[in-house]
Amino acid sequence: MPASRVQTAAFYEVKDLAAGEAVVLITVADPKLVMESLNLQLRDALAWETRAGPEGFRTRVVRREETEPADVVDLLIRDHHRVDELLGKALRRLNVADVAGAQPLLAASAAGLRRHIRVENEILAPMLPQPIGMDGTSHTAVMLREHDEILAQLAEVEASLGLDAAPEAWEVEPFVAILSGTLAKHEHREESNLFPHWAAALRARPAAEQKSLLARVRAMLEAATADGA
Image (tube, rainbow, N blue to C red; front, side):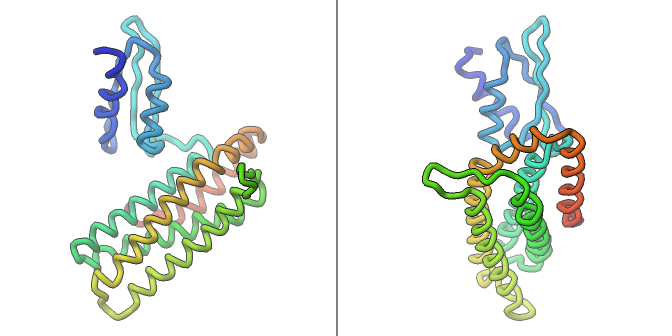
C-alpha cells in the first residue's frame, strides 16, 4: 500500500491487541518512526522487535505488559496503566448501579495508588533529578503537590463508600470520576515532564544499581496487585 497509509493500517492492526496475541507487520521501509508514533498514540502500550530480511522489515508487536520492564520508569508507567484500568472498570460498574461490583476494584486501586505514591515520594524523588520547567517551576514539586491532592480525593471516594452499609451509585460515582480525571492529567504531566529526566539519570547509574532499584520498586508495587486485575 502507499507509504502514506502504512501508519494508519498498522494502527488498526495493533490498537486492540489482546493478552497473548502478537501482530507481525511487514514493511518496505524501517518502521522505527512509525512504531514510535503508534506507541505514543497508544500511551506506551506496545513492545516490538524489528528484523531486516529479504522481503523488507518484519516487526513483531505485543502488549508491553507481557514483556519485562526495561527500567524503573517503564515499571512506573505500567503501574499508571494498571491503576487507570482498575478505576475505569469501577466507573463502568457504577454507571450500571453495581456498587458491590465496584467496591473491590476501588479498594485495589486505592492500595495501588498509595503504594505508587510512596515509591515516588519516598524512594525516587529524593535520589533523582528535580528538573525545572521553562516557567521556573520544579516538576518534582508539582508531582508532590499533586500527590497530596490525589490522596485527598481518594479519601473522598472512600468516605462516599462509607456513607452507609449500602451507598447508592450516584453517591460514589462523582468522586471516582473526579479522581480518575485528576489522575489522568497528573500521569500525563509526570510522564512528559519528569520521567524522561529520571530515565536518563537512571541509565547513567551502574547496571547493578539499576537492577537493584528495579527489584526494590517492583516488589513494593506488586505487593498491591493481588487483586486479579
